[in-house]
Image (cartoon, rainbow, N blue to C red):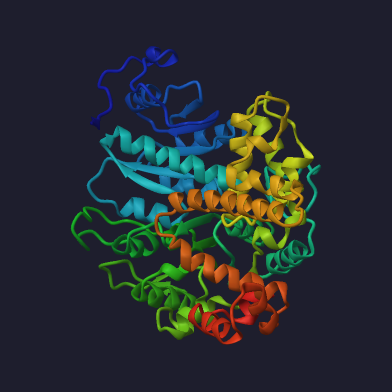
Length: 509
């Protein structure tokens, strides 16, 4: 569906415009400022974005827009390039002096996009050509508003739940998390490249946002990109942009994240999944501060701080020639390891309390507490999905709970069985054997549920490896005692250690 400004629109209709769409992509009260000197465009935008969740203001010139912004405090500005009086570029240049992080989408009705490209270099979020495709325009506005909200969030690394200074927090009082907080503070005052490592769901992006929020670049943009979520053939274009005609479907020039984020911080999540060709380009940016768009040959300078993250062992990828060694050393200037949740179980009550408060803000009728039995089960579970899984479990408990407190029965079976295991006692002979059998049955049921959720999981090899690791941990690396626990010979244990690539440094501690 193409959108053209409505010719001959009556400006008196703008006060109560008709709905153009049945649904809205917005989830909270957002503020949109349109700067355009055409009354038809203003009218059309009011029809497109009329919604209880969207407040919209208009300005007919760049000068008026600059006067409106301090009072209206918009979350997003959409601005035409050519207007009477101050041009869109001049307006953007002045706007950036006082509102460096305010997203601005540039609009143009002309075939050439060179003016819009210049606007992108001045820090515009994106540009769009007239006439508009309404669904694409709405999607662009939604993404820009999400980026605006993300940049406004102050990620606190104070391990206190009572603080009112943050919207989202990194919660923890354990020694492992205190070490993380110290490194965040050290990194925040530096411009060094950082590599954040940790399992999936540990909160690596939150750590990156905390570093950014306390850095000298906090007034500049923060953009995040998941290298594993974007197809290989599109990742380079997303990062570096492309020239018109660079590949099939490249109908116009596009600015990549490195240009959009000039002066700011770029978070490259799951960088271990990046292809060798893209790794080479990233290395060049780190070495020289320059890159070329896909299909182009003109070097473009950029000043971007890179924070990378991965859940893969990059040293192993380097050894296997799957990741460039020189890029690894460039990224690994400061290493920050985020511990898995099973290594900081004492933080689980704090995290549960934090998530209960978070969900209570959206649903005042949500449960306010958790029973000791449920808390024991939560603390005993190993959390393969880490903090993200814990948040989902708490959310699920809120949905299914019928009382004021989270019960063990409100937890998923694989979690709730932990509290039942703690409460069981064993007696001699057949009673003990029956209890062990019941325990194993419960564990098997829970493991099968996990396997159903992850079709790629090979359950028997996974269990065999985990049993070897846990036995070595239990015996502090003593292979004779570990083999005895497992009921195998020491020689068989050594074969399993070699087979699964278990190292004392990585797995046993």
